[in-house]
Length: 452
Image (cartoon, rainbow, N blue to C red; front, top):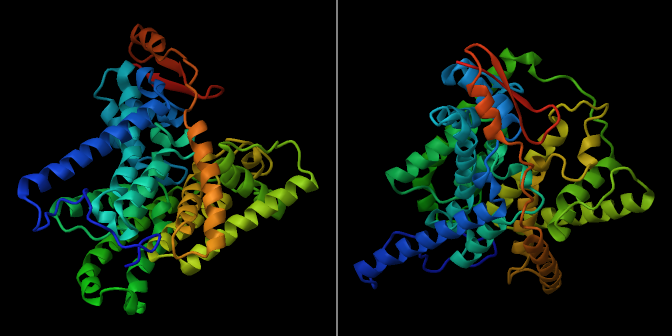
C-alpha cells in the first residue's frame, strides 16, 4: 500500500526479520542497536522537556485531587469502578492504584513515570516494523520526533490525567498499522485497545475509523494485495470488537450516571470557531504559542483567523482526497476528537463554554490530536507526488514550523508547592483526620486524604 508520502519502505532496521543475504549475528545486532538508540533518545527528550516532572515530582490537578485521592480514600478496586464526567477512566485509576504501593512522598513520581512511559509509546510504535505501511524508516523517525516536539501541549506532558490523549494516538496507530504477526504483538494490541476503550469516550470516535480501515481496502481492491487483506480481516474484526465492547461499557456508564455531565450553553459562533482553530491549532505550530489576545475580537483578527482556518481545512480536505488510507484515517479521527471537544467540552464555570477556548493555553489536550494531524499533513505535502507549488509552500512552512518546535520545545517547571512538606505534616495526623495538599495549577486544586 502507498505510504504516507507515496514511497515504498526500504529495509527496516526496526524489523526483527532477517533477510537471507544478511548473516544471523549482524541481523540480530542491528535491531538491538536501533531500539537501544530509539528508546534512549525518546527517554532523554521526554525527560529534558520538563525535568522537574521527575526530579521534583508533584501531582497535577486531577492526578491527585481525583485519581490518587479516590484510590487512597476508597481503595483501589472501588475507585476503579467510579465514573468521572460520565465515563470510566481506567488508565489514571490503574496508575494511582500502582502509586499506592509506593511511599506517599513518591506517589507523584510513580504516576508521572507511568504518564511518561505512555507518552513514549506512540513515537516508539511509529518506528516499529508494524508501521512500515506509512513509508520508509526515515520518514517514520521524522514523524516520531514531531510527536515528541508538539508545541503548546504542556497539559498532556507527564500528567496521567491527560495520558488518555496519548493513548488515543497509540490506539489509532494500532488500528492503521500492519496486523501483528506474533503473539506478543497481538497481546499488545488487545491491552492497548482494551485500556483505551475503558478510558474516556474515545473508542466511540475511533470505531468508524477502524471500520473504514477494514472496509475501504475491500471496496478498492486494486490498491492492495487482496490475498493479504483476507488474512488480516479476522484480526481487524477483533480490534473492532474490542472498540465496540468498550463503547457498550462506556455507554452503560453514561446511562447510569446521567447527572454526571451538566447541560450547558456552548456560545458557539463562526467567529469564535475560526479564532479557536487558528489560535489553538494552526498558529502554535509556526509560532510555538497562541498569540491571540482573548480580550480583543476585531474584524482584522477574525479575518486573519478565517484565512488560517480555511487554509488548514483546505489542507485537510486535499489530504483526505489524495492521501493514503492511513493518513486519511488519522485525520478523520483527529477531526472527530476536535468536533467532540467543541460539542461536549468539560463544564467550566462560565456563561458560554467556548469562551475559555479563546484563552491561550486553555484546553491544550483538546487541540493535541488536530495539531498532530496538521503536522502529518504538512509532511505529506512534501512528498514527490504532490504538485511543485504545494511542495514549495509546504517546505517553507516546514522550515518555519521546525524553528518554532525547537525554540519552544522546553516547558517551564511547575511552581514547587513542596509536596514533601505536606506529606510530613500528614504523617503526624491521627487516624481518621483529613490532610490537605495544595497541588498545581493552584487555586481550588486541593487534594484531601483521610489518614488510615
